[in-house]
Image (cartoon, rainbow, N blue to C red):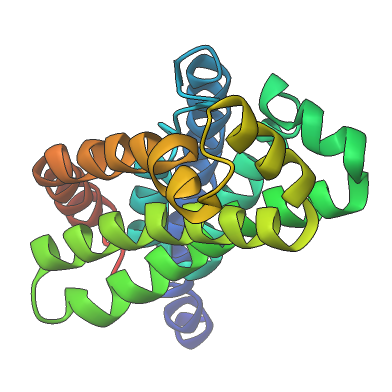
Length: 208
């Protein structure tokens, strides 16, 4: 009896960690949804800004790249219900789904992988690298989807802005440039707070 009891005892912390992970991921998932719905009303240029990359990075840092990918996917799902995608849905629903869901998922996945790789050397650097990578991937995949599936929209917006002769310049300066810079700045400005949050949670929950 004593042997069986001792063998089973180490499993208790694992169950506790799993419960904490489920609770933590539930809270972060809800936060992603709330922030994205709130941010859909904050517009800079033709599109709303993204405030959800911060909780995605925190989730990826605490629970790994799979958690980052999941939170990024949820971010994409919420975006599908915002006005930003209406014009894209009118052209192609499948292409819109692929672009929107893929950009969020890959942003979270890359943030998680980079954080894990860099954290061994320096946690602050890991957060900064992840904070830079997430908006780059999110914006980059969106632009790739635009050039592959939605050039009609891009050309129309460029014509309205008087920049039809230089599509690339319009895309960089008028379509996503300002949003990208704001999202990047948000991530970098609060990076120290993110480092603090990650450190506290890992210390209290023993997530390593």
